Image (cartoon, rainbow, N blue to C red; front, top):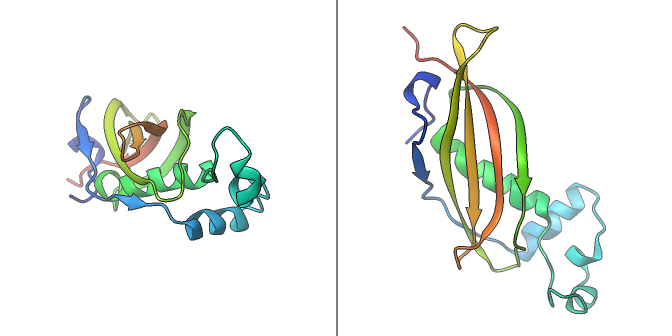
Length: 150
């Protein structure tokens, strides 16, 4: 399923995204390096083992970025004008190296654009879960999408 136009969505529509991803040490290391994040909880095995988690915790920015990326193909690929924002971002459980993550999406709101008659705003609720079905990341994403061409 490719991205859909604004007028093809309905409130309450749900997607179980097929793409799954097992998180690697390289994923975590690259994200920390790219974002200049020296947090020892993400990079120092000895330090991380001394914390309540007992192991390295994957950088949350990676988790959030992966969640959004996994959902694009089924939601906004080829129909996006712009992402307008993200809201209510939470990470209620940690992600560890070796976790396999999957995503679900629900359409929670549709609104016509006031400034662009050929577009509308879809609010998606994205949820990322680990292999034990624990939520590891969740947010609302407001996306300005093209309407279906006449």
